[in-house]
Image (cartoon, rainbow, N blue to C red):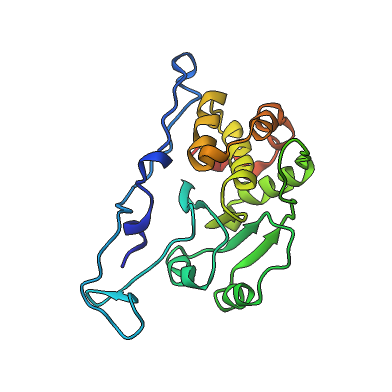
Length: 220
């Protein structure tokens, strides 16, 4: 089954910029979307729902979505997601969790020649907030380097830490804050945090604009 069949069409994950006065800045990333609606197995196997009509049954990680060409986001992938991740042809994974990467995940990365970039950011709950700006900045450098594409960004649930990193990327792409916050809230939903949005608002992207590989990709 082709990966395009799984690239997101979830209504709440579609990006729709709202700022008319900044329409040039609030561009929509063109994505070939596909249906994420549940598919009922028609041919059962001894392994449960491993195959559908003779095709592999691929399961995306929690909150999986396409950010831009060659850039994906999700929650923490597990072994049930490995077959799906193989279809993406990943070169690298950015993990924003501080815990040691699971051995099964490491074996999958080694078997598929995928490089792991781990930027440990502690999970937190308001009001005790300390989002490390330097860590986000270093993770962004990895995202901006096309040599690391295709790349998957993930934390535990794909909401807060991943949302902050993607939000800062959107600022580099000249999205207006209304659209940045809208995308963040679509993934965080009821768990959206004012502190995360404040962090994205204040994040200074100017120090990243000198990277030669970043803007050739961002402007394509």
